[in-house]
Length: 352
Ligand SMILES: C[S@@+](CC[C@H](N)C(=O)[O-])C[C@H]1O[C@@H](n2cnc3c(N)ncnc32)[C@H](O)[C@@H]1O
Image (cartoon, rainbow, N blue to C red; front, side, top):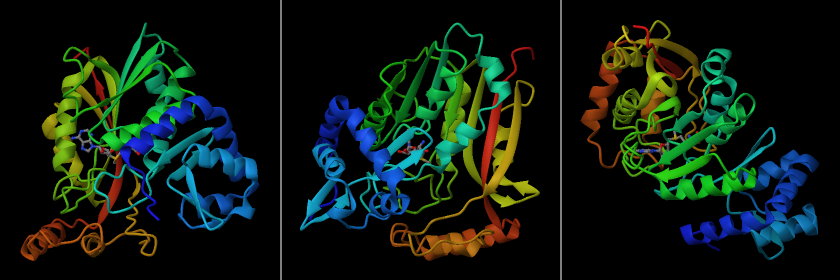
């Protein structure tokens, strides 16, 4: 049984969401509240469940909206579903299809938690806030940004761009599923190429692809062979697009150790400290998930990054082993021992 929906089939879910979003939301939350384990088995682990474990009305609506399929009395989900507070997010499961959309939500939640008072005070009196989520994937965290803005200024527009068409279809489904029908626009674009040339933004959130991965076809995460190449392009565009007193938050990763991280040098090259206030926060060690079986505990030694390249989605086929050996040597010489999650806040300082 093919358990991967085509883009056209996904578009069909979008129109169903338009019609049935209240029932669909109710059923997804029902399953979650009744038994979180069952929810996880179905929507995180992608394991088949006997139909008797769910109610008939929940199954009916899930089937009608093409969320699950049923085979010999067993139900299986087409989508990964994440729930955070009152929000529901649908994405693809991890698979080796090159256009899979980004499957995790931990990065979006970081936006929700780090949207602080300083940002609110900068934005709350604006007659209209223009915001940009530069690599929105399945509209996460655009939906969190929307919810944050609603609390202090209802006059806003958030643009979400992404290069992955499939992720944006999921984005549109997620907007409907969370009852967001205005103030947002999702645009298929290579960084800002398809955004109006004159648009500047008061708030920018960016979570560029940051995996070091030899496989350039992994759209959801490919950050360049060494992981930074794409981030640099995004950082340059953010600089061009930030309004006179705008503020940007960029969530990326950095190789390094606690005293010295590589991203600091990159930031200093792009943003002149005379004109920008820069804050760099190390949030956590990045926990790489190779697949369900291999989860490495923090702290993560460099060797594990390289092992990651042997994973079924990140194989070394196309990369000469010499390149990787040189890379390991470079990392060791620089005492880089970890990968960190890093949140960079860039504030344009109009008085300087
Ligand atoms: C780390 S994911 C973040 C996804 C989403 N914000 C989330 O937290 O789930 C990076 C996203 O960047 C997108 N992307 C990669 N290259 C891009 C490009 N050149 N222009 C726009 N988006 C790009 C990928 O499709 C992916 O959705």
